[in-house]
Image (tube, rainbow, N blue to C red; front, side, top):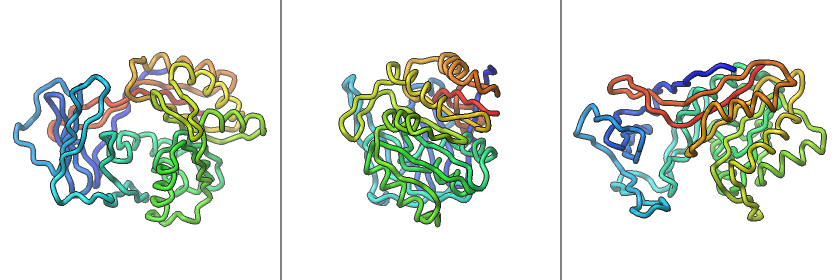
Length: 287
C-alpha cells in the first residue's frame, strides 16, 4: 500500500482563488463564492476578496448556516463543465455547490480504466458528475443515491451533457442495501466508486453511520468485483478518520484480488500561490 496526495488542479470552470483565516474563495464559472474552511489556517494572499456570495455558518455546534447572495446568482443554478461533461452548479443548504471539484483527480483516473461496455457502480452518487464522466467514455453505469432530488439532478446533468440516452441506471435506493442485493443476485462490476457520508438516511429512513456501516459495505463491494475488475475508489469527507485506516480496510477487503492499493489525502491547488488545501481522504484499488 502506498501513501500519496491527490491534487485537483484548476480548470476553466473551477478554481480555488485564495484561502486563509478559516475561509476560501472559489470561482464557479462566472461567479465567486466565499465558504468556511477550518483547515485554511494560514493568512490569505489578499485581504480584499470580491465575491458574489458567502456561506455564513451558524453559531451553534450542530452546524448549519445560510448563504448571503447578491442578486446576480440564479436560484435555479447555472451550467458548468469539466472536460466533456456538463452539469449544473447551485448554492445548496449544505454549503457546497452541488458537486465536489476535488473529485476531478478521481474522474480522470477512473476514465483511464474504463472502455466501451465497462460496468461501473456509483454508490452515494449524488448529482452524477462521476457517473457522467464514466458514461462519456462508454461505460454502463449504475448510479445509486437515497435522495430522489439528487438523482433527478443527475438526470438533468445527463441531458446537459448530451448523455440522456447513455446506458445509466438512475436508482433511488439505500446504497448499502442495494449493494447487498447485488451480491445476492450474483452481479459483478468492472469498477466501483463510493462516497459515503458521515451519516445519513435512506429513502425508507434507513440509518447510515460511517464507522458502523463502512466495513460491511466494503465486504459487499469486494464480492461485486472479480479477477478482471479494474478499480475501486473510496472517498471520505468530514470525519476524524485516517487515510491509513481506510487504506488498510480496502487492502484487507480486496487482498484476494491482487492489484495495488494507494491511500492518502485529497486536495485542491490554490491559484494565488500554488499551495494545496486538503479536502478529504481516499483509498483506491486498481489492477
